[in-house]
Amino acid sequence: MKIQLAFHNETEAAPLSSAYTDTIAELMEDDRDVVSLDADLMKAIKIDQIQERFPDRVLNVGIQEGNMIGMAAGMARVGKKVYAHTFAPFITRRVFDQIFISSAYGKNPIRLYGSDPGICAKFNGGTHTTFEDIAMMRTLPDIYLFEITDSTMFKSLMHATRDENRIIYFRADRAPAVKVYDDSSEFAPGKGAVLKEGTDVTVIACGIMVSEALVAAEKLEQEGISAAVIDMFTIKPIDRELIVEYAKKTGAVVTAENHNVNGGLGDAVASVLAEEQPTVMRKLAVRDEFSEVGPMDYLRERFHLNAEGVTAAVKDVLQHK
Image 1 (cartoon, rainbow, N blue to C red):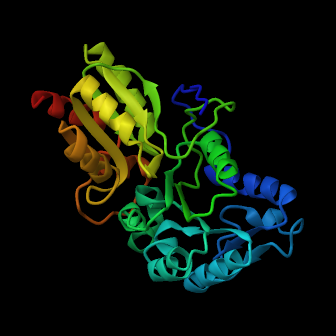
Image 2 (image 1 turned 90 degrees about the vertical axis):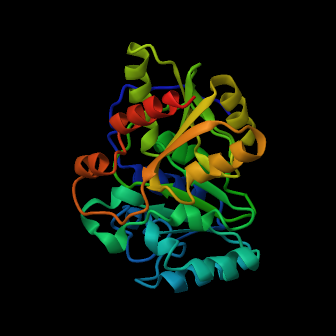
């Protein structure tokens, strides 16, 4: 893994979904076994723009998510490398049985892109919001579960896992992400990335919370609090060694995620600490409730999924260290 930061708290020009679409095109150029399926959201990620180049391998199945997973598993059975996309609740919660039986249990590995997870659903409402997909997908044996931070990471992980013989779940917004990594960065599945060293507390974040954790760490530094920041982009299999190392080093841990407090990154980290390195910790996440409809800024503040929320969690955990 080769990581170089390019963080200035600035938003990328292109939508994060473009990284997915562009990489699909690159993979298709190199490998005729790569197939893309979509459940009537091709225009949402602009993958319809490459359909003319690959008309027999870029397919819109319509609003039939269960059938899409069945098709993907069937294609995987005969050696195809299938990528399937729809909104996060529809590619996890709605079709979990098909994923479990047709793909996981049947050993037909597929690659899933769940877009607009958690508060990233914004104005799409309760039906389109998922705070429980990580919890569900973590229960599948031998899965790679990625929470994407920016475009560089998305592209790197898609290339790195093209030939993996397991289910892969990419959890990522469609909108432009805050740029965290230089374009030269390369990522290894199953490893966390240390973005900032610290001695007082370790903040383990994923997805849209990584940039917020970095902003919070800078503010905390000005107050004399030294916070390490880790991007735990692979939630399963999680980097146990890194978690234990920094729990020993700092003696306090805060997790930050765009997900329900139950079953997500926080619980994954807590289980490691409970077994290997009991450490005081706090979990910054949605506190076991449903979402609301609104703009991103409002939803971040409503659920404390911002730098201020990270700062408060850090100060709270340090009082109990």
